[in-house]
Amino acid sequence: MTQNEPEDPDRSVEPATTPATAEVPSDPAFIRVLSAVEIAISVVLLALVIIGVMYQVLGRYIPALGWVGAGELALMSMVALTFMTTGYLVGRNGHIVIEVFDQVLAGRKLFAVLRIISALIMVVTCLALAYEAFVKLEVEWTRTSAAMHIPLGMLYAFALFGFASAAIHSAWKIPHANRPERKLDISEMDA
Image (cartoon, rainbow, N blue to C red; front, side, top):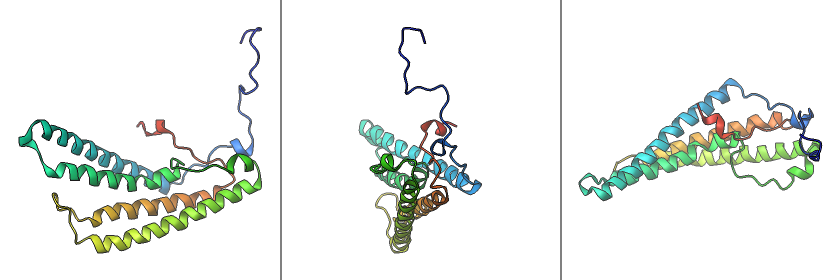
């Protein structure tokens, strides 16, 4: 910085070390393994979506290669991918949140209470959705898809796993409500 430039009060050389900026607690091994499994399965599902869509495109230009199952593969993989990433996104705050009270309550004890209540609501909601996915899993297992004959209950298996994982990730946030939360960092996905 030169003498002529005004000093920016928002820029500091070192961040303040307050409880609000303390280090995010590290996840236990179980949650790290769970997240790794979610990412690995999600990568495979994303690849299946891309393969299915590309095969559909190829089938439009070369009709002899057309296959009805390609669209079904892409669609079912996309639905499964949505459910599969639920827990990972909840654990990293990558889901949609409304932060109306966060700025107002930041640094106060009520902020921790707000985070505990929201995490409890997420746990209860995710457990209810996991239960419904389990019920649908049993009911829909006998129905199969039209082209590939995959049991439709398989989609509910992904929903069950995703919502159970989201409940686990939310429950992990409860004892750490007074600490900074982990934020979704796209760069951590680069392995």
